[in-house]
Image (tube, rainbow, N blue to C red; front, side):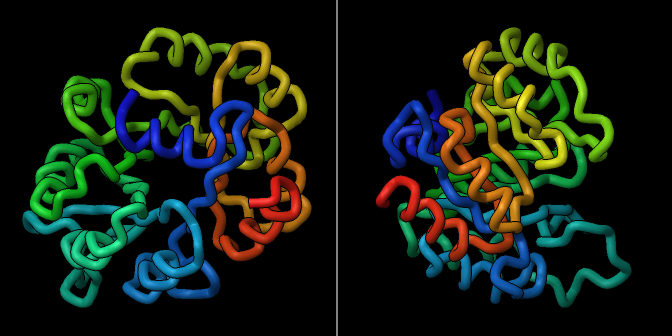
Length: 232
């Protein structure tokens, strides 16, 4: 098991899982992918924060979409520099295009952060051997509209086939219904769910025992609910 996933598995009591809280980009009303977001995430009590990563002219920037002018955007190097001083904080790098795992890992090594990087988003099969050889980890991300939460059998088959390469299925909250949760219990799979901002959904997912991570723009609320449910 990779250091980051092992840490996230065990820091909240192991299985059944007490969810880790990840501060989604733009947490607590801050601008998405901003330095303000990073600083808020680093001090709010969450175990991890999420950022979107793109490359432009050889530099890794924090942005969800392509833009005309990258010069005013924060860089991933700035993010790593700020986070390096917080040795327990992990970073979910949501890479928006294929082929970014190598440059992200190489940059993370410069800041001693390779073992604290988790990838979601656009990761191609040919990138998996590199990830398997690195200290960073990867969670399989699945996207779905709210009316397409159907059969996860294919994802579960892929999970079993690649079990040595990742540990968690990262799902849009619109995919998580009662049947999905029961399927996870039956198959022994583990979920990360995003982006869960509403109190009702946070309270529904918190005690399931199969949700290892909740990514949210409202980490303070999520942490408050976790404390109510689990006492921590």
